[in-house]
Length: 563
Image (cartoon, rainbow, N blue to C red; front, side, top):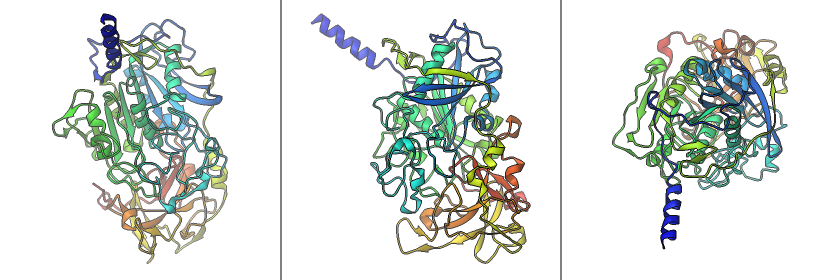
């Protein structure tokens, strides 16, 4: 009987060993020491290294910045920032701004690269298998509308996608669970990367963090669920769960959700996106719905919401709200002036608000390899055949701009063509739309029949030029322009334009992040694809290496915000 009671006690203790996160206090904090403490680093300090490693027969790539002050005997925190759809790790590191704070705050900055196993036109296809991106139909039905059907989005690792409509849109390679959803069989590239870093470097196991944007923000939410006993905090930037796939962690994980107030690509406040995909509104991620108890329940939140102060308040009208008093870690949502893009277009402000939040937390119960105090330290699940390379990964401007996506000329230049500057007046079949930091004359597209949601008289979305019902004559488009029109459910002052049957066409242009001083904005070579006087900027598209053409507003008062 005594033995039985002891075993029961031990099992109960082990089950409760993992706990919520606690506020970090530099004066009292006791760092966890990973198995890499005392070993020489395989990465050069003070510069970004590029590495490849194999997991389950697949070669993966990641970028890693180890600060100059790194000491093999002193544990350091680690932050992983996951890129958006189509973004290589180099562009993400330049644009997100996380690495800019690695020296001053003293952490190891890692940018893993998603899988690119799609040979179809329109790449690169870097992506993350998470939150139901490859699991349509699901508990909430199809994850996209009939109009968003794209067979070219089916990746090689998915074998043959049989869902109708074709809503699968990322790799099926295992990056956190076999399906990219659920709590079972957690493994894959990212958990193995954390284990590998712990084995190679002196990591503070109580301060391992995850962040990411767009599709990488979705991956961040999934990691918060599946690595809840490991991660001290997460910072998903304009990410979500597909409808029906939202989950909450089993123990508290502090979270800050960052969303532009005019983001229609992965909207914060409605389900249906401009390109026809269904997501979970942030309110339901935090408060729960029929699919999940909600993040606030996991973090033991009580009481009402209140203003959450940051060092960036009022920049781009940033405003953050804390969802109650949460013993398992803060649950915070932030809104700022902008669309589907990093806070203040990326760089130091985005990196600052992300790292400020993450650095407030520790998971003192985590002892390494995903194991918690009271549990036996599990075996390391390591990447194999690791090779550290020079900084040559990713795709440079020249190769992006000469890729098949941009080699086709589809526009006809016309002095009185579409997509002109609203200052000069728009054509009768156009509306002046506020897009990004500017405006453009956007052709209107009607709907057919009486369906719910509305059925547009165009082919929604896409990643490369295709016949879609949008005009192809562009006002003063340059002779070398390879911009192409895309149809989206967008309008002025609304985030539910698709549901309202409000459809317009925009011009898509290539957008590649520059160096860190460029803060992730599009370069001059990208602007050259737009009509004269317009700029290419990220704002409206799920494919994060692409932008849309906009003209500067006549004055700052002309820009209309969506609250």
